[in-house]
Image (cartoon, rainbow, N blue to C red; front, side, top):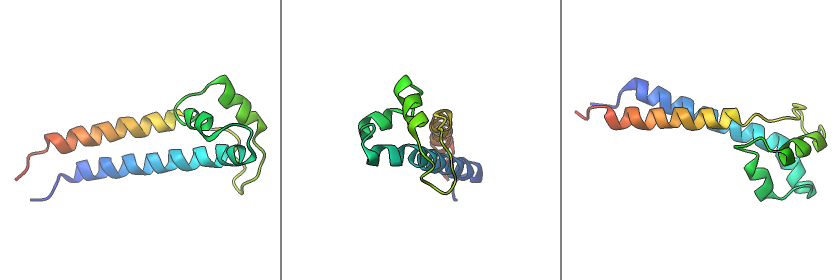
Length: 97
């Protein structure tokens, strides 16, 4: 029999949240890294943390994209990881028939 639909839905939600997180982060920090304001490694830290450097980089963000988002919330990344963990546990615990 196939895997539990709740497990599939949870995994799909985790993937969507992760894509949303990465896309949102790239909208804010992509132009900053290509301009050389901060390095890609320093910007990668901002994916999961809200440091002073991240806030400074966000302040330097110009509206170089169509959505005009100038800030990023790392909580969405952590939510994606938490839902991924729930999906992995549900998939592991689901009975294989």
